[in-house]
Every structure is written in C-alpha cells, then in structure tokens.
Amino acid sequence: MSHFLWFLSAALSLCLALCFLHFRKKYSFWRELGIPFVPAGFPLGNIQHTSHQMLDLYKELKGKHPIGGVFQFTEPVAMITDPEMIKNVLVRDFRHFYDRGGYADGTHDPLSGHMLNSESDRWRVLRHGSSPIFSTGRLRAFFPEMLRMMDEFRAFLDAKLASEGETVELKGMLGQLTTDISVRFLLGGEGNNLNAPERDLYQAITNGAFILPSLWKQFLMTCYRSVAKKLRLRVYTRELTEAMKHLVAKTIDDRAEGSANACRRINLIDQLLKLPGFEGKGSLTLEEIAGQVFLFVGAYETNSLTTFYCLHELAQRLDLQQRARACVLEALDKHGGITYEAIADMPYLDQCINETLRKNPPSINLIRVTTEDYPVPDSTGVVLPKGLNVVIPVYAIHYDAEYYPDPERFDPDRFAPEASSNRTPYTFLPFGGGPKNCIGYRQGKMHLRTMLAMLLCSYEFSECPKIIQGTRSEKHSVLKLKGNLWLRVRKLHRMG
Ligand code: HEM
Ligand SMILES: *[C@@H]1O[C@H](CO)[C@@H](O)[C@H](O)[C@H]1NC(C)=O
View 1 (cartoon, rainbow, N blue to C red):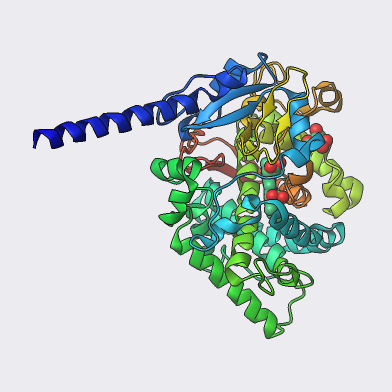
View 2 (view 1 turned 180 degrees about the vertical axis):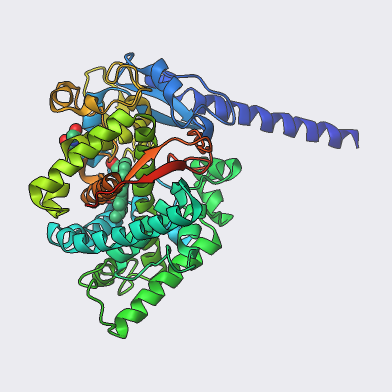
C-alpha cells in the first residue's frame, strides 16, 4: 500500500515537472529567437479577448524591433509594429504569409469552412471564384437597386418618426437594411427584413457572427487543434448554421424554378456552383456554399457598423455634419441627382468615412501565419519558423499618436489630400492589404457612401439623452457596440 502511494506521488511529481518544463520551453520561444517580447504566464499568455485592441502591448513593443513577441495562451504570436515590415508581410513577401491559420472544421462546424479560414489552394479557388460578383459592371448594375432600397428605408424611417417621435434606435434599423441589401446583392433575393416581420436572418447573424468562443474553447482551438477537432468544438451555433443552409437551399430552388428576377444576373451561388469540388467531389456541397454565403452576408454587417459609427460621430459635431451635408448636396447639384458618378465625387464624405474607419476598424487585427520559414530582411539573422502566428495590430496603429496626433479626436481633416500623402504608408489598414485584402472593398465603399449620402441629405442627426456611449463588446472578434444607438433624427426638406 505505502509502496503504491509512493509510486503514485512520484509519477504525479514527474508529470508536473514535465508539464512545467514543456510550458517553460514554450514561453521561452521569443527569448531564444532573440526578439523583444512581453513576458507571459501559463495558461492565458498575454493576448486575450479583453486586450484584443492591443494598445498596451503595441506601445511596449513598438520601436524596439520591427517584430515583437507576445503569446496567445501558450502559442507565440509575432506582432508586427513597423510599417515597412507590414508591407513585407501583406504584399512583398506575401507567399511566406499565405494563410491566416483560423480554426476550421468543415465537417462538424460547416460555417467555419469559409474563405477567410481557408488555406492554400482552397482559398485561391474560392477567392478567384467569388471575384466576378464584384466587377465594376455588376456594381453599377446594382446601384439603382440599392437606391430603391434606400428610398424604401427613408419612407420607413419617415413613418417611424411621424408615429414614434424623433428619438430613434438606429443600430437595429441600419442592420436590417444592410442585411436586406446584402441578400439582394449577393443572392438576388428579397430580404425584406424591414417591412415584413421576417427578421430571423438579421437576428441570427447579429447573434452568431464574429462571436468569440468561450476561453477554454479558444485555448484548445489555438493550442491543441487536434484535441479540439476530436471534441468537435464549434464556433457557430446550430441556429445560425441552419438559417444559412436554409437561405442557400431556398436560393438554389428559386433558381431551378427560374423565377423571373431582374437582379439575378450572376449571383454568388451561381459562381460557387461553377467551382470544382474539394476532396474529389464534383462541386461544392450545400454546407460549403452556406459557409461562404455566411461570410459574405456577415461581412456586410461592417457596413452598418461603420454607418452608425459615422452618424454617431457627426451627431456630436454638428459643424462637421453640416460640412458633410454640404459636400453631398454639391455633388448632387453637379451631377444632376444621386448617380453612380455623384456618389464617387464626395471628397469630404470620404474623409469622414476614412476617419470613422480609423477610429473604428471593424477588423481589429489582421491575421497571417508563416507558410514557409521567413528570414527577417533586416540582417539580424532572425528566421521566423514556418507555422508561426502573425498579427498586425490595426486598431493599435490607428491610435498611435505618431501617425494620428490626439487619436481620440474625430477629425476628418486627417484625410485631407495633403495630410494623407504626408503620412507613413501602411498605417491606415481598415480593409487589410495585399492579395488577401477585403474582397468587398469597392462594394463596401459604394454602399457606405450611398447610405450616408442619402441619410445626410434627408435628415439631421443629433445626440439625445438616451444615447449609449460607445462601450465596445468584448464578446466579438470584430469591433461592435454593446448597446443600442439612439439618436435624435429631424427630417430635412431636401431630398436627394
Ligand atoms: C466597412 C466595410 C468593410 C471592412 C472595413 C472590411 C474589412 C475587411 C478586412 C480587414 C479583411 C481582412 C483583410 C486582410 O486580411 O488583409 C476583410 C476580408 C474580407 N472581406 Fe471585408 N470588409 C468590409 C466589407 C465587406 C463586404 C461588404 C464584403 C462582402 C461583400 C466583405 C467580404 C470580405 C471577404 C470575403 C474577406 C476575405 C477575403 C480573403 O480571404 O481573401 N467585406 N474585410
Ligand atoms: C480613404 O482611404 C483609402 C484607403 O482605404 C484611400 O484609398 C482613399 O484615398 C482615402 N480617401 C480619402 C478621402 O482620404
């Protein structure tokens, strides 16, 4: 008996000692590589959901070396703090940073198999296959549709103002409008969230997209992927998965029935159905298509987020709002109404959009993984090993006073032509960069400009006591507000 106890405690101590050595080894990664780092301890490391804005880590590491070391749980992560090095990662040496290393399990969590998480060839096929829906011709053809939907939105808002008074919750309304526009643009269908009570798609997406899994799931998904896969961990809820599969199946059915729909032209699903399948299958599966559609519809949410962040800023600075409105009206006069050309000719509105995206980049960080050993081109002889996580702290860079003095201030003149051209390149990255940049960039820009132009020429926005000051959600991997956004909205008598 006593022998047995003795043996047990010896085995236990040995285990603990081995674990200790294992994690000590992991946490000495950056020291051994000779790169400045922020020390971290078991098990959390130093980048977590609460610090995902990275301001403190960035400040501590910037200027010491183009790369700084941090840890996510027990895994080393290279934080890029130098703009020249950012250019190397995103563009010049792109082939060394070809993947994002996101956790994906196409079998048990179908939505996670989307393009943002796809690697190597799979990413290339999906990216290439989806690109045609963003062609200039298609964006132009969609413009009148968007105007029509915006007009319906204005009528909806007018009715609301008339019946409920001037204080309006805008976040939900803009979110529903944006979901409708996305479904129309991507799939050719009628979303109709605003007027019909069919709110489930918008609700499913706001509840389920970009949500961070619980800490222990994140831990396994980051550090012990094979265990996470054996346990069949999911990021996305069944509700959201079913909603997306239903949407895709319905679109494919409508298509088979040949329903006469002017906006069908080429849509995302037609494009995806043309692709060869993966792993020997003839075409993509319903689940795989649902994953892509989910990413695209979900990504649209960034447009409504950006619109209301911008209105929120302009509601606090009526002088700037007046200037933005004047710029919109001038373009409408010049081009004889709200046309595709007019929308692209509103420089001050663009400055406001850029300043909004600087302060609120929906994508807080850009993520890459080294797909080949990477000799750092600064002659110190450091080689980043294959498989290393890399993060570009966009939010932190956007709040760096060296590039943006007094960073908390909303000042669209930071993006006046001269100020812009004097700024260090690769310090404004709301849409990422290089071959993996945002595929929806041009569509997103057009959408943002149209929404803001049409809202600003019809309404004045100001703060009201009910406003929720921008507390940010810590549960999401993108920048979101926790609360709702109430503003006072006054109808103006000039319509674009
Ligand atoms: C304000 C609007 C938007 C912002 C700020 C934004 C931002 C971003 C960022 C930062 C990335 C990652 C880029 C990188 O890693 O270098 C990205 C990727 C992506 N975005 Fe957007 N986005 C916006 C709108 C949209 C829209 C409207 C769509 C869809 C129509 C979209 C679809 C995508 C897709 C599919 C990717 C993955 C691209 C790839 O892996 O190749 N985005 N976006
Ligand atoms: C806004 O930023 C984009 C880069 O995302 C840039 O190409 C554009 O020129 C900027 N516009 C203004 C008005 O600064």
